Length: 190
Image (tube, rainbow, N blue to C red; front, side, top):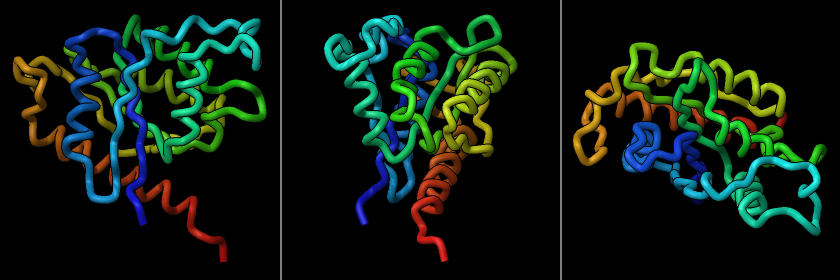
């Protein structure tokens, strides 16, 4: 059997984002049987506009996002926390991926949520808000382990490499749990 493909989406556009660095660490420390692919097209996805959401007007970046989400076995989303919630660019990308109704790339998609913050709460509120959004898309969000990386600036070196062994272990555990969830849905019903 080939590796499961997990598409990793960072909700941050910053070049030195701790959340993007967290996804790179997940890729670098992924367990056997899981390949993590980083999605780098978030900045190109335009604001959602229903007038453009048809076969004749669909922006290329939105089509690419939908195609990649559909093709992935699961998603790993790293969300920063802006004003106690999800960044607008991440919510916008999820709006595009959730359309058209009846053919959503997010429906029944297995998803794990993680996040890093320089504050003391590690994106707990943003992750809760993101769970609410993904409940509306009928996604299958992993319930645990929770990866709430607080004081992230102390866990990465100056090159953006994660050096905290506890966080590395949590990332591996999360990807193992996501792999188990994906495979359990594929198992034949007896």
